[in-house]
Length: 260
Ligand SMILES: [Zn+2]
Image (cartoon, rainbow, N blue to C red; front, side):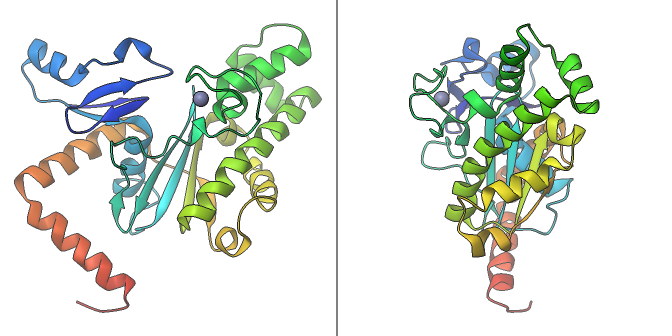
């Protein structure tokens, strides 16, 4: 069984170290608990990493070795493929771009800092900002209707969200030099032209040759697909590691322009 989970996952023991948006899992091992209850093996994968695997196995990143996904939902996450492999970092925590400071001294974030990207560019942040502007609570369906009807307050808040998101995107594009960034967001799905706003805003912060070499578009993978892809990767590494090393050496040869 494959399961996706938000937050910091330690792949060594499949333990959730710290989840801002699902704190009930902190320091717990949901995979181990489920295995005990259900009697089946479970593979836990961080949800942005899962989206990255989904995009590579089933979505628009098939054949790409250096790409990133930007995941806007309850928080903001990033998954990165570099050199044909998922970038996990030393502890498995790579990709937490939602906790990069983009507004020093801004709103408090559940991580303990202030002004993190996800305090201004996540779905809840958008609903909060729109609600403040209108002087009432705004729910998701109401916000979507306002986006559809091009209500000026919603338009201005979307542009503000893009300005902040572009800072995070600019950092990622400048540091990682991906060929593609796939955006996963119900806001961007509702208004695809936001990608153009995002790209224009990113011109202010990204290194331009890296940005101009990067294709930014909406992603097509899903988190359930990511859970399936994680199981496939897990079984491949466990049962047929030679396939992993062979595909890696092939991708390295391809980057060097060799054949075979
Ligand atoms: Zn934070």
